[in-house]
Length: 140
Image 1 (cartoon, helix red, strand yellow):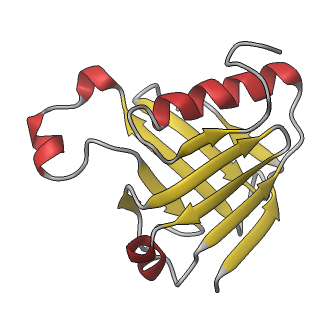
Image 2 (tube, one colour; image 1 turned 30 degrees about the vertical axis):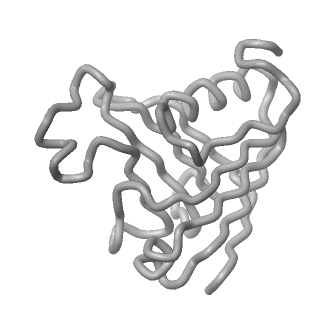
């Protein structure tokens, strides 16, 4: 599998337990077949051990928990009605040769702003995140 495209019927922008930054895109609320989940520790929770182990970045899980990983996204482009994800080669090898993921969604303006803010937190300090909606963060 090289490319996966799906429409996200369910998008989460907060960890229900409040343990970390979290964004999840899923094709269905229950019985999910296709999904992408991104997590990152709150900055105050990161420590030297996280850095030593390469865990001081975002965590990626897609379409199954078999091969979750830290990092591995070459480019994440957020648009007003979609997200385009390109995985680095070493990450693609870990996730059944998945190189690209296209996720379509339909969010109200406020929900989109929450998504944009959550992704900004997850990708803080990373060069892979790009917003191409023509809006500044916080502008609806």
